[in-house]
View 1 (cartoon, rainbow, N blue to C red):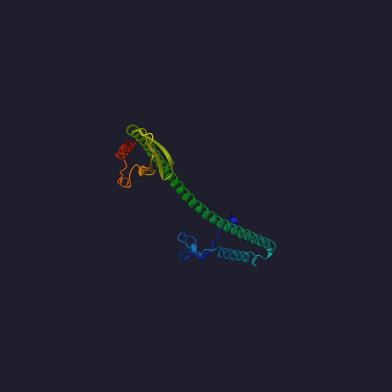
View 2: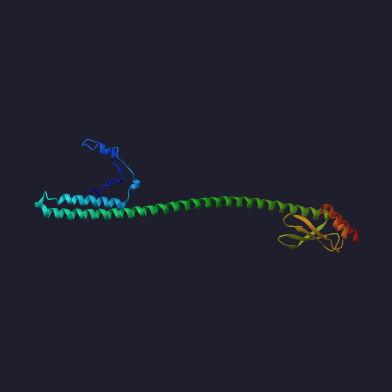
Amino acid sequence: MNRNSCLISRSFFDLSTAAQQDTPNSSWSNISCDWSKFSPGQEIACRDEYVENCIKEIICPDIPNENGETYQLKNKLKDLHQEYIQAFQENCSIATQHEAYVKVLKNLKEMYTNLASQYKNLLNTKDTLKKDEEKTLADYKLKKEAFKKATHMYTTYFDLNVSIEDSSDAAIVASVCFASAKTMTPVKIIIDRKERKIIDVDCNGLLTKEECKDITFGPEFLYYLRQRVLNST
């Protein structure tokens, strides 16, 4: 707007070079400015001073016959100056709001970056859990098949009847009977659920305490136990 044309105060301009060349044909291209010295209050004060000087020139005694017109120009100039001050203050307010919006936008960008990083980590965790689930399921199928084969082998070769008596998160208690010994008291075998191996056996008096201490769990033990049962019946 022409009415708010820039009459920037000279306090932050370096006019030393231009002053030496202050001629009609002199160049002002070498003028430098220091924006650190600029302030809205100083700018308004400079413009007030400029307006007052203009008013003094308008009502100077060189044109005594134009007092009425001069008075109108003076009021108009004051109105324009007041409009400029209002516009300048509004611009300062808009600049402050813009700075606040920039800070908010920066915070939102940082939050978005953090959320994107967390989302990526969650996707990686999901992939890891899915792989672990697939591996666990595969291991379970293998162990289930191995247990099935072992049960079939022991039933076939050792004439066993196996039933699950109790089960918990830590262990499985299996009751074992030899089919050929119809009056046999079942032997309780305790199996570690996690390790999938025999950790204890309750022989119900079929073995002595000394024999129980030397037990090595495996096919040899079942064969030995079967022989003891058959010999005792």
